[in-house]
Length: 183
Image 1 (cartoon, rainbow, N blue to C red):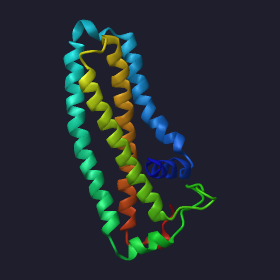
Image 2 (tube, rainbow, N blue to C red):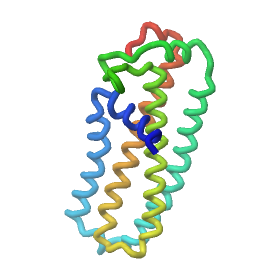
Image 3 (cartoon, rainbow, N blue to C red):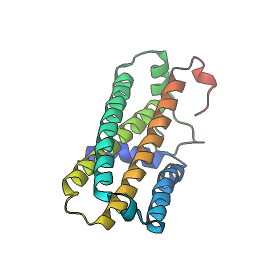
């Protein structure tokens, strides 16, 4: 179990502006929660069927994203070219990343790998939450649906943010002018 936490702590501890990642993820969730308190959706929609449809679609979407993320991880783990070798030798910039574990900076490859692995673990956690929600939907009170939906929106926004960050980083890995770029 301890080994599952290492990519998470590497990701969270190595980023200097990690608060921005969470702020971008929390904002739409809080807006949705605020709207749900201001409006009375119960009169216009069947909340239970809406929540069931939402959870079902999220399971499918997260399963697709999870397979995409695992493909990214596979590409990183199996790629052996000059760009990847340079990433494995280059330390991350102190401008964007902090030192972790025993005051050591991560290599750029470790930064990228921790980002992809963190995203996969978030997706697995979210998929587990969705499965639990689908099993509990008959037992939940209608007021609980807005809180679960808020948590779901947070996870979706967070997963998309980290995934986009990872994909953009991978794009720059294979950019021809690796030495002139600053991370």
